[in-house]
Amino acid sequence: MICHGCRCGSGALVHRLCAIQNGVGACGRIAARIPCDRRAIDAPGVAIMLHAGPMAGHNLHVMTENFAFAPENASLENTAGEGHAHVYVNGAKLGRLYGAWMHLDALPKGEVKITVTLNSNDHRPLSVAGEPAAATQIITVK
Image (tube, rainbow, N blue to C red):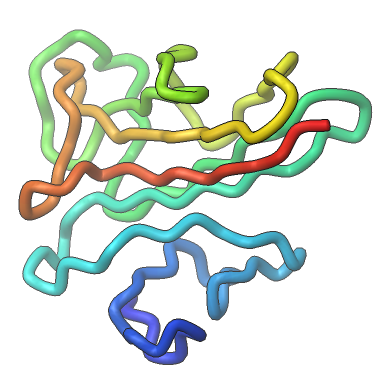
């Protein structure tokens, strides 16, 4: 879905979850967004939100569109619309993700950049019109 009411005024941002409106989730947290490619209606998309954990760390919520996590097919032949995600912290790969949630414990103090990329079953990064199917959010860890 294309957002026509973005605060930035561009009208060219995709909000990847119905609860996310004008770049802010229903909980009030800022949501990461990716550029819209109107030529690729069935293209995979991803958005992320980080929530401070109630006891420690952060909970990463990965919301996808036109993409299904398929851990049973990891490292097998590519099937359109499915695969897994890779999670990066400050550019270093933390690991694979096979579902919508991941707990991130012991993040470094200060500004931390979390990036999630969508990948095919055979581990190739997915892209739309040459742009990675990825979402990034920067948080400050105290």
